[in-house]
Image (cartoon, rainbow, N blue to C red; front, side, top):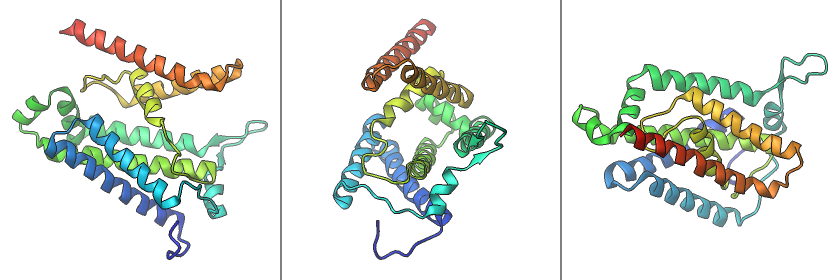
Length: 240
């Protein structure tokens, strides 16, 4: 990607990737916290800018030729037994980050502030929460996780392109809404999100298993998102 850079250890590259993701999250968070731009618009705008920059820099060409050690690591299997080939390293990452964010959002001040801001930003500010700083840190952490997800995807596929991950935001919304995250803010659990993602992935696997044309996936995803959000809004209105 950068001809002037030498071949580097994959974990050093990961640190660089996480730093870049954090900086992009810092930009998004600052725009949202200080300029009061709606989060959906701000993050979508930054996403589009980064996507366009990547298209220009790579000339829309895929990138390959990664070190074999990098690809082998993400193809490892754990606890193989007989005909069972073992667990993918991605499952271990899902469990590890699930536990990490459960602790972060339920046992730390940062997590309490996040829920408070999501529920009612003005009330949180009146209660003494530094909303601007908290919002910025929330989006910085999110940016790091997006970067790490891209790192994992690159290891799995053995290559990368500017279009990798395009439209994944729809799948993220679907997994979260199925898992009980409220679009009105302030409601949701890490466990619920993991279950929602699992259900959504199982839905796609079942569709593939029964021979449904893969081109229907996007239509089904859109239908799932609309249904889940509509049900969430109905619950919110009923509570009011």
